[in-house]
Length: 154
Image 1 (spheres, rainbow, N blue to C red):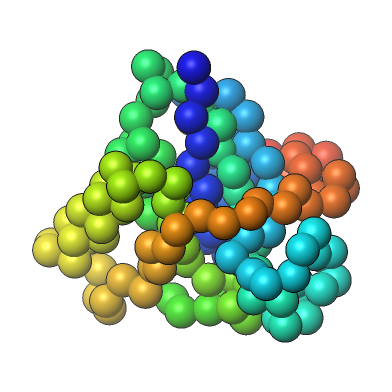
Image 2: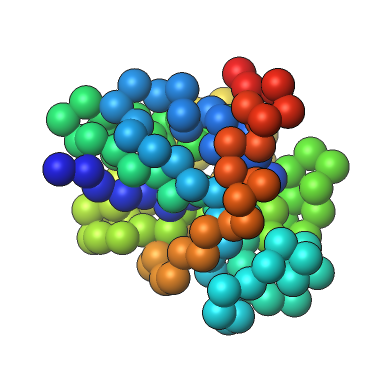
C-alpha cells in the first residue's frame, strides 16, 4: 500500500523530477500547500500573498523506499539553510519545508535536521520548516512533469 510525503524545496519543477528518479516512488505531483487560499492558481501563489509553498506530493511504496531515504533526497536537492529562497527564486512560496502527515514523519524530519546540524557539512543553520500537512492543491497540468515536457529531465 502506498504512502505519501509532501516536500517544498523551491521551484517544484526540479524537485518533482528528482523524486521521480527514486526507486520505490510511485508518482509525484507538483502543487501548492501551506497557505490560506482554497485551490490557488500559480499566479496567486507567485504573488506571495496566499501563504502557499510550491511543493510536491510524493506517493511511495514503503516496502521499496523508506521515508528516511526520501528525506535524504529532499535535503540533497536544495539548500535547506535558505529561508524563502532557492537559487534565483525568492519569496515564501520557495521556502524549504517538510509537511508531515504523521507523528512518525515529524520525528524522522526532526532527526534528519539534527543530523544535518551535527556534522552535516552545512555552514549555516537549517531553515527548513517541519509543519503539519494541510490541503495539497494539485498545480495546473502544464506544471506536471514540466522538466520532461521541456526535455530537462534528469
